[in-house]
Image 1 (cartoon, rainbow, N blue to C red):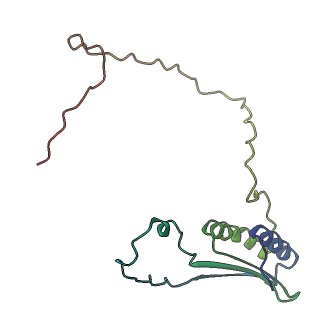
Image 2 (cartoon, rainbow, N blue to C red; image 1 turned 90 degrees about the horizontal axis):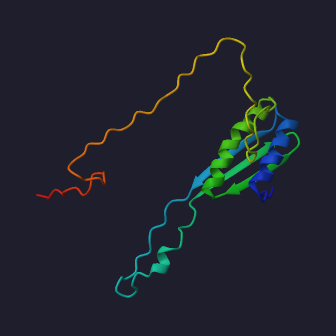
Image 3 (spheres, helix red, strand yellow; image 1 turned 90 degrees about the vertical axis):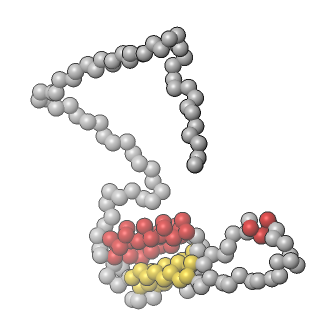
Length: 162
């Protein structure tokens, strides 16, 4: 089975498959990390260190493969990624898909890309309310130190090191 092109497509198709067959469809994940490659050593006198080599990002070492499989229908949905942000998003969405696997409908849960709505207004109660007292700010008293009206601390003397 070929891999799906986007994670959103895998998420949509997997949720549809799990809603259709919650008892038989299963999700599997596989995360592999390639061992780090030993740096190639060359004589440092022959080639000086160039800044162009330091700007190239290292190749991705970790790969996440998620697969939704239904043995009854033979449907297999796969997605593969090595992007860290997408790995986190897919792992977070597995909880939502897990509720579909146990046969519960996901209600009241916003989609991953939805925005939050404003909360409903609070209704006023008919009972007694707590009295609100007025807060009066206290005026600051300034020390008059012989005509210095700038205020503030001014420069501090630095302590020497021993």
